[in-house]
Image 1 (cartoon, rainbow, N blue to C red):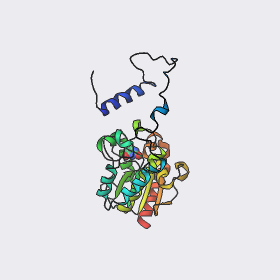
Image 2 (cartoon, helix red, strand yellow; image 1 turned 90 degrees about the horizontal axis):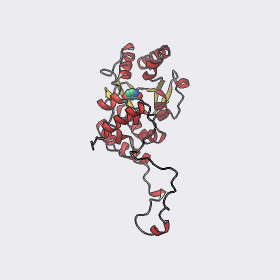
Image 3 (cartoon, rainbow, N blue to C red; image 1 turned 180 degrees about the horizontal axis):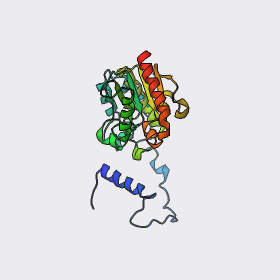
Image 4 (tube, rainbow, N blue to C red; image 1 turned 120 degrees about the horizontal axis):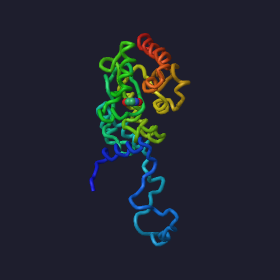
Length: 254
Ligand code: URA
């Protein structure tokens, strides 16, 4: 039988899902009405073999992430700490870690949500169509990732099929996001979309949050609609433009 690596198999499965497949079936039919054979007797195992972990022994991934993030003294060390963090399942399905792009130490730091397919391939945030949209938005206020902007995401790995991030994934990567801000030392933060607001503001209603200055990680922070949303809803560009001008003014005067 032909064998596939993880990424080939994942792409083939994604294609099936796009074509409408909702269920995986086997070569041979399964009789779902068959009465199952009697379950193994629990008593036979008592006292033998490894016992399940007690709740108190289960490692808490958030605490482990906090410890790993605190140990990083530079952005390079932080990247290595994220790369080595194996408690978030997302890293198993991703091709690449997507850590950051732009100018570390720039006055503006932007957080997106999670890498898409293009970013997962390139290992850099915002390189696909959404990234081109973002670059045009920044150019309109005379800024750019080549000069005065630093970019990252609240999740460094693509989610399976680009699904929404789960609360536990956001929570376990949050200590790295917070340390990232401490080490990059921006003056102002922009948070794109609901999930980055969930990570840094613990709120998730971008349409109410956008356009209003708030504080995150002790910094001035502007929540904005995601550039991907603007691609699908061009009528929202007018408000995004007002938010961008407010960011520009804050950086100039603030
Ligand atoms: N969307 C994001 O939120 N981040 C990326 O890096 C790309 C698309």
